[in-house]
Length: 273
Image (cartoon, rainbow, N blue to C red; front, side):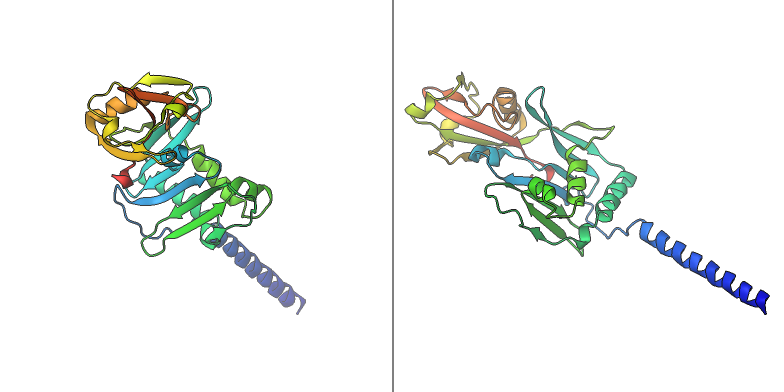
């Protein structure tokens, strides 16, 4: 009888171990990745930060922090403090790399988070939006004042893990994003404002006449889409001198004939072209 009871206890203990192990394996198993559009211009995952204490021109020229497209192309920005330059990189991820990134996102708890977090009450902070586009289950998570929300414990800590991972993203096969199309922003300055610039440079691109589209306004900018060789000319002229390249040279103005302009630009990404 004692042997029978002992055998029964061992059997129950064995079954408990199996059940516990199975549950642990289920919890640690890779998440199932839903279907998604594999188009080269279809956004699969994106993080973008907008607003906050930034000038109108800074807001217009801001690019997403990171974008992953359905075909595996990734595009992201990186700020080089030593050069004071924003640079755009790209890489073509392998199917396995895409799978790993999606599993990383889903494992963070992304699906269980609320759509919006507005717990920070300080005004004029940037808003960060995380977008994940599956065909049958698109998801968007928006956090106002992300860094402060993380410090105060107002959002799941994995928001910070995701943001840092993709903000600092690097890939062994990365390359400089080829700029084929840009948006050029221009505002015509009055005589008084024109004298406030740290430096005024000659525009010098006859193929792109600022007078034909620039906005005559105290705060609003006209925009013009430019491609091909003219886009190359504009980027070469503005590189290092104005947004989007650097944050610190919004006081560099450009003169066309006798009129002074404030300019900025940004590349157009695949989903915008």
